[in-house]
Length: 81
Image (cartoon, rainbow, N blue to C red; front, side, top):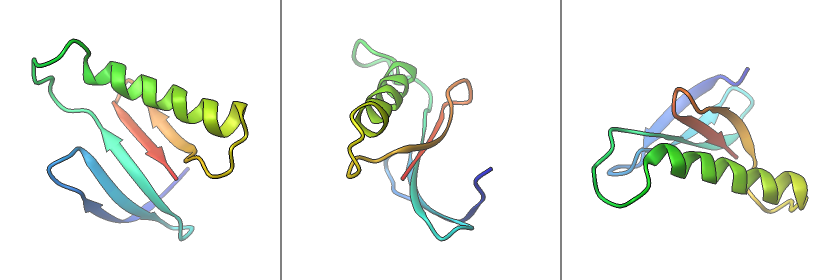
């Protein structure tokens, strides 16, 4: 479990910079209502970002790439470091 102890929203986006109880700085993203513009839903974008981050950090073992710390795609949340 990852506990967030501090949270700063980066408006106007659905993104926040947070600090965990382990002292890590992380980025948290979430989805909102679909705006109706474009051809892809935000759910599609979030799933694609999770897959890309995992590919870079886990499959290619790129140590400089952000890594997925937690995800809850049904709840539309992603936390990365």
